[in-house]
Every structure is written in structure tokens, then in C-alpha cells.
Length: 93
Image (cartoon, rainbow, N blue to C red; front, side, top):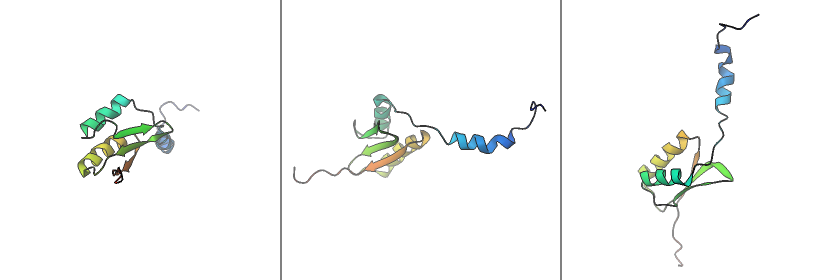
């Protein structure tokens, strides 16, 4: 029984399941800084932690909707979750 020329549609569910198993990678500091600058952030306001590679952290006080959307789009394209931290300054300092 040869499978040559057999349709591949029965394998479609397995292929779709495996495509969801993409592992996140650590992006270089240069990549992340470039995205941050393109989206209007200062250096250091966007970072990725090595222990949680799937998370992209954005620490900015009062980020605009356009800034958040810009970073979110980049993160989604790379299978990352954006964690937005509204960094308010310490009033005691």
C-alpha cells in the first residue's frame, strides 16, 4: 500500500496542533531596543526576561494606546505575551 500521491488533508489537524507548539526565543537587546524606539519608548522600557521567554515586559508611566498597540503587534507576531506595567514614580523620593 503506497502513500505516494495520497492527499495530505487527513494530516491537517496534526500539522495545526504542532504549529501551535512554537517555542519562544530570547530576542537580542538590540532587537528589543529597536522595537522600543520604533514604538516611541525609551531604552530600557521594553525587555524580555530569560526565565520567562514568552513574556515581553513594557514598563512605562502613562504609555499611549498607540505605543501599547505598536509593541503588542510586534509581540504577537513573535508569539510573545505583552506584560504592561504602568510604572508610577515613588512619591516619597
